Each structure stands twice: as structure tokens, then as C-alpha cells.
Image (tube, rainbow, N blue to C red; front, side, top):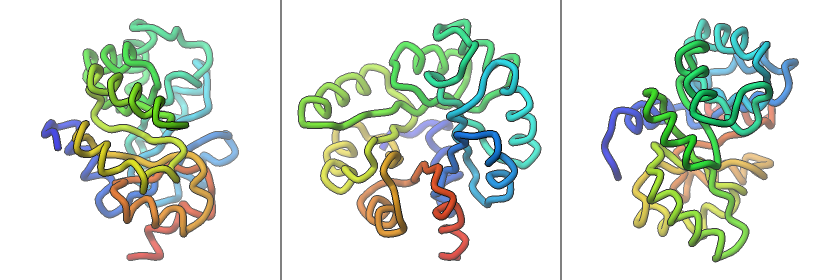
Length: 199
């Protein structure tokens, strides 16, 4: 596995708390802040609400990763990344786009690249893309494909793997973690406390 500070930070944050809570509606922010998760993915927000979300999440001592492709009102380019890094103080970016991964690294942000795996062709293309962009971690969607592809991902890419999408119950969550994922991103409230039940 690659060895850099961003990867170490992600690994450390997920070591004992592998559930990443995903904010998809503002109504869930208080509940998310009350979890023991160390990382929050912001999948919802806009240029007007992002600063408030970030401040509250930082005050709760959690790392903030913004899903760059889904945030409204911010240019989907290097200047948008710069704004998030310098003006909002985001810890990291989640995106499908390699150019955004490279820009985020330039501004000192941690990077997670989303990899959608529908079939063997999408897996092959995704591996090639990720080899070029070299994110600090990848989020594989749907998460249920992790048992089938994790060994290949690890041998070819050597970066931490997060499972996301269609992690619907505890069995799905544990299956992904038992098969190479170091974290699970989920908006399913019933899974947010799993790590506390395991303690």
C-alpha cells in the first residue's frame, strides 16, 4: 500500500470508526454530529450553506470531505477546489473526476476518487483512471461488489478502499469490511452507530 500522510490520516480516522456518515439532507446534520464517526461526507449543500456545515463539523472534531460533483454554486474546476480549500477549509474531496483529484492535491486536500463498477469494462477503465490520478483512497460503488474485486484493487492500486452505495444492512456492512474495505460510507441512519455496538 502507498505510504503518504493523507493515506495515513484516512486510515487512522477509519481504524476503529469505519462508518463514514453521509449528509444528504440538512435535517440530518445534528444527528450526524452526534455520531462517533470521524469522517463526514457532505453530499448535499451549496455555496451558501457549506461554510456553516463545515464550521459545525470542524467544531465537532470530524474530518470533512465534500462530494465536489454534487455541491451547487461552486465551479467544477480548479478555482472551485481552491475556494473549498482556502475559503471554506475542507479537509478532502470526493469526486469521480481525475482533474479535480489532481487540483485538490495541489491545494493540500485529501482525495477520494469514486469508482463505479457496473461490469468488467468499467472496472478496467476505473483502474486505469485511478492509476493516473493517484487518489489517497477510492470509494467503490456499489459497495456490494467489494468481495469480488477487493484483491484486484489492492494488488493493482494499493490504496485504501471505501465501500459506498447499496450498503443496506449490517450484513452488507460487515461483508464489505471483512473483504478489504477500510470504511463504509452510508446515509442509512440505522448503520451510523454500528461501530459503537462493536466496541
